[in-house]
Image 1 (cartoon, rainbow, N blue to C red):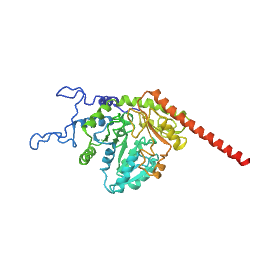
Image 2: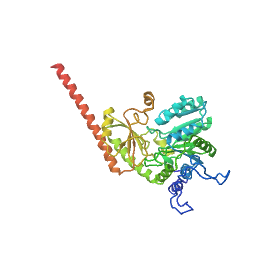
Image 3: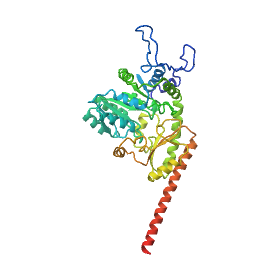
Image 4: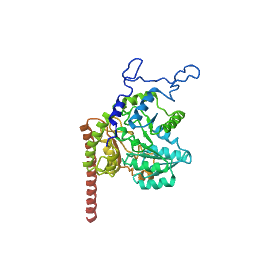
Length: 411
């Protein structure tokens, strides 16, 4: 189901700032790099005075993301984690935030560390069971409920509408991390969320050359509070980074289409290969949250996680057999990446926390890029076949050793 007016908003993103220069008639908007702006005499503060507090290039990016999400205000930050921590500025020491037990490792580390320092209280919970979330919410009366949907890296889906109802009943703010899907495939504010968070480093920029974040608010007053904190803490993004992100944003609709097409082709390969134990992708009918995803998303994205058979040796063999996928953290760029969450993105979690979250050492996460589809399919197939060959050789060696021991025993 597509949200009303989505096509118009996508066009606005493509044309953000186009033909707006009144001085020289530049088709593309200029970048305003100045760190400060002059006053029009004593007490004559203009719209902009200092770039940390406000900048025309940053404001253009903020308005564009805001319009895509259907919000009333957007704060653009210098990293995705700055956006995350900015939201926690709304909390006091006695306030509680409820967050997923299987959230991104950086968020887990930040929430836990800030809570341990006394900034606020945190409760990690399983968001696949909203009845349990309701009980936890009734018990702790949180100020903020934080959700990733899809979750990172297991791609579980949370019912935003139901969670918004729970949050509303207890007076909590519902914050949704929409990084994996972007406003093109999911718009949480229309489903009842109060705030939407993005790591613009990922799909919104899309070229793995800028880090950034954004927080979009449904309530303009709440957005103004976040603006105040962003200026106070110095977490706003630079004009150059905002300009680069705007350039990436203009091709988001075209890139996402290619990302998804490639992801579906890769999923087909993973499903058919005996080296793969389990595939996690909401676009599969067998995914536990597939039907829910269909009700609140307009697509399934291009992040896939899967568990490989054969332990750590199989993981190494697979990774060494790839040529189109680079072993690296992050996601959402035009290039294809593979990540080992247990030792990379979620390494800050304790072994116990990772086990509880279902992040095991055999789990790999793919960020499928926009390369030529047959090349990606062939690359994954070749690497998996190497694993199959190694697994079969190990089984044969084990069988031969067992036979040898039996012969020796009865000789």
